[in-house]
Length: 378
Image 1 (cartoon, helix red, strand yellow):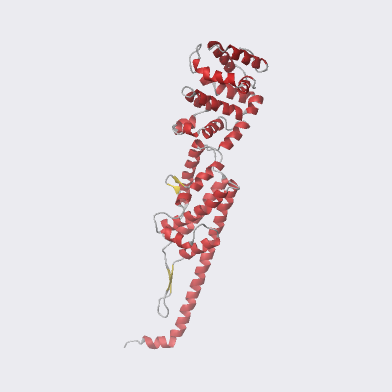
Image 2 (cartoon, helix red, strand yellow; image 1 turned 30 degrees about the horizontal axis):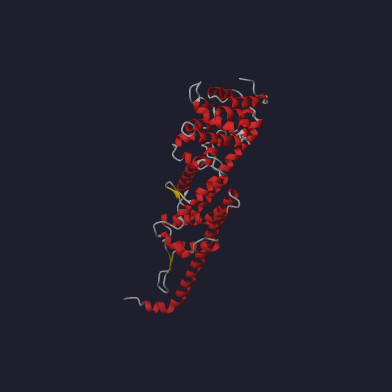
């Protein structure tokens, strides 16, 4: 004997329908609570990113504009690379009401985008997840050797890179916040992604510190003669002031080069350029040059000694461009002869004056040296 389901549903159907609808209502509320909880978590990470950017670069409007692009790019990349974006949840078996089928991550993205100022709406963001590259790749990418505009603009606010220099705490916190965003949207542990970002950014930091150093920071270090960064600060100042000169230098050579090696390499083919570089260092360190014997010795001896010894004495024709500039600029001559150090370099210049017939210049340099207590005579 078969059981007639119609009679069963006639007796119990209403109660079953109400129960199913209540179950779906609870399901929907739980979904809303879940979305709000994780949206709040994402907003907290967004705020952390903005706070750290402001800590590193207060007042930089472009970096503040790019930061939300980076947050959104990371979230969309996580959704694309993870397995959660298309995951569905189902409530109900369809016996009395149609089952409720939802994807939780799209409403999470929509709620997050509505909760903070982003430069893109939900439709464009969701569409980019299924395309080749999520939105704001150019601005926010940080992987496989690709570093977006945001990261490149961030580096000048960091100290010069050195293997022993720790990554500044605001950058550490910023990367951790992005890791949390990635984990939420990918549904995966994001530590490997975080490590990849860290390594890529440190490589960018090292490269730009060497190839595009912060000129203002280098000038400040040289001007106050920051002993912890000399000669790197002098090198950084020269690279920042003359980027075209160094664009074809081997990275390892440039990394190991000090100002003395730079001037010695450049002077034979471009003496006026090398002299301009030397004078930039002297001008920038004008106070230590006058007041600090160690700084003056570094700038007037260590930095230029290789140039002074490039050719065999006594001809010294190679020093004619240097002598001509000393002859034509009294301020330059006073820097060289009346600073806190005087010794072998000045003596070599006097010898070059003898060899090249610069008697008037020799007399002038000797008169300047006579006023310098550091000069003990040739």
